[in-house]
Amino acid sequence: MKLWRSPLAWTFLASVVLLAGVGGWLLTDPATSRSEALKTGGLAGGAIVALYALWLNDRRRRVEERRQDIERRRHELEAQRAEQDRERVADERFAKAVELLGHDADQVRVGALHALAGLARSRPSYTQTVLDVLCSYLRRPFSRGDGTVPDVERELTVRLTAQRLVTDLLPARDAEGPVYDLDLTGATLEYFDLSGKLIGGLLLRYASLHSSTNFSGCRFAGRVYLTSAGTGSGRLLGYFRCRGAVFESHAWFSGTTFAEDADFTETTFAGKTTFKDATFAKDAVFSGAVASCELDLRRTSFGGQTDLRFASLPASVSLYNTKVAAEKDLRLPAGWTGEELRDGEVRIVAEAG
Image (cartoon, rainbow, N blue to C red; front, side, top):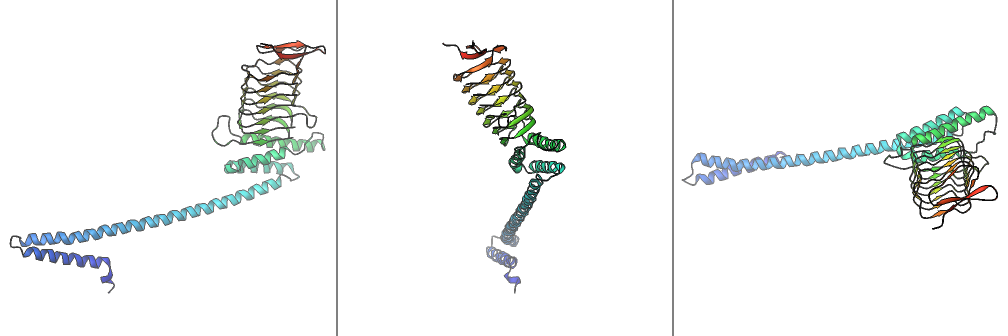
């Protein structure tokens, strides 16, 4: 009974009926031969079989499509579960590494820093978070006068590792992709080198930078604040190199103290720039630098050889009480001049007209 309920049985029956019906009808016509009647009836019956074959192929196609859709959804679910597992493992690695940053042993802290950097490399979505943690470690109070000499040197080794990893995680100057911010407010840094890197915003307020600092070739896509750097704990900046850098937004150096030479040769200041109340204890070079927006040099003090021959200056430049030591070599752009004061200093002013 089930056989006669199948589409194949009904197709066979319809084909036979159509063959008999068409063949029989044509045989009633004297002009039609038996062979032609059978041939035509066979074609009619075969058409039914062909339609069944088409329907069967369409059904198989739809079944295959449903199977593939189910398989695709299964793979997506497995991939989602695998991604969740990777996220869970990454979160556990991150939490464990952060916990180990407080370990007493310096080698454990170094290992934790490398674990964080490795996590950022394998999971780029963690990069900004890892950079925040590294910067947070560098913001911890640190002084060479704290504790015994071996302990201080070991801690310095850990901090230099953190600095190097920060640099390694930053993209190259002309790289495409995400841009990362650094918050090093109040940090104590030594031999800090970001040369040739792309940085978003940079906060170095009240930071102490020792030995040398190198920002040469950097591109700062966000705002940069070195406000009062070198003064927070009485420690001054070391040699400051910033040749060929690009500041695309604000560049704030107000109140910053440069204890050693500062070199801004061919640097571009595209946004508002201020050196108000900054102190250059030794040589300062701005030869070939470009300032496109406001430039504030109010109460800036230059104690060494000074080269302010900017390649380009904005219409708005503030020079109120901008002073240079009289005995030092002073090179100024066209339209600026120096007025000698009674106290032996020279005040820089813009010529009228």
